[in-house]
Length: 239
Image 1 (cartoon, rainbow, N blue to C red):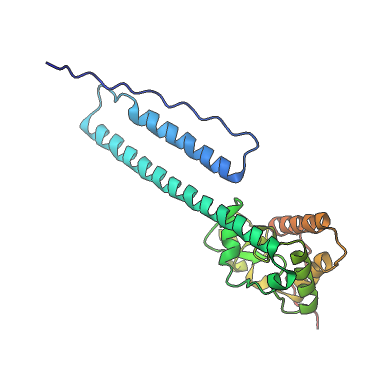
Image 2: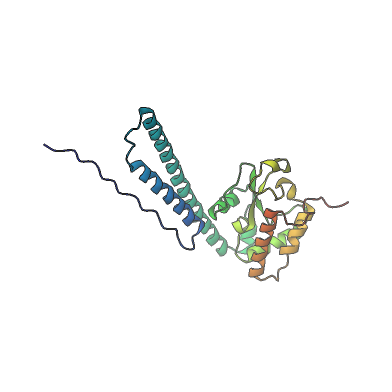
């Protein structure tokens, strides 16, 4: 007669933190931590004096945590897809002529939004919108903005590259609900004469080395996020 032997569970080891991790590496690492904690908790012995109610609550929590892990797996898979798409986008941009890059659509902003997500910059809140630092065409300083865009393309960078993007809340009236970027300007009012003048002053010079050009993009992005940009960029042109 066979005897029932208890199943032996082995503890899942804690994953090692990756060295010099990419945003995706850290996402996967955080998932591994959660998965290890979940499985070790699920496989641990139930309390001897556990009541029926406590058991039901424990099982309900376990099922909820499992569903959360499934959702996290799907998010990681989507993130990998976005990264692959960004890699393909950048390779395509590098192989295109400046004329071809100049005809790429910048609206709607779904492409820029996906590319920001791919580099670990997800949409902070539902009120945020993807903003092109160097506009696609411009409204007030068209010639200078087009020149700035062409300079971007001269380095093989597309208009929807995340280097040229940032998340901004939609309207100033929603500032109180913006916990992520409360110091940044609102998106809808930003397309002013002064904003385009500021951007043109940074990027319309076609003698800028690539290193300087990209450094200025990072600086403008940081200033927009922190609110340290020129105070008058939201103001309309005087007169």
